[in-house]
Length: 59
Image 1 (spheres, rainbow, N blue to C red):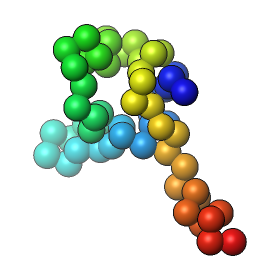
Image 2 (cartoon, rainbow, N blue to C red):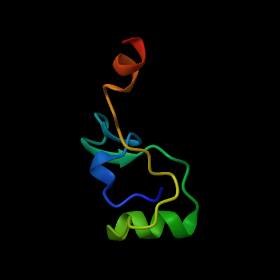
Image 3 (cartoon, rainbow, N blue to C red):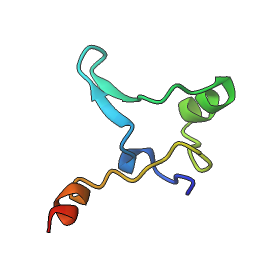
Image 4 (tube, rainbow, N blue to C red):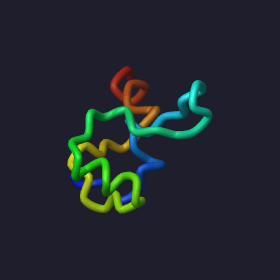
């Protein structure tokens, strides 16, 4: 599943040191360029940040 929106990705988190959101994946050079341009339409690392996934497994 390729990502369409970094804001809904589990790897897109707020960094308090830099005071901004960052991608925590170890991106290669081409992926980093796309990320910095805001073109995340083909990110192969995208995973939907589903906070309730564990809760559903417990039910």
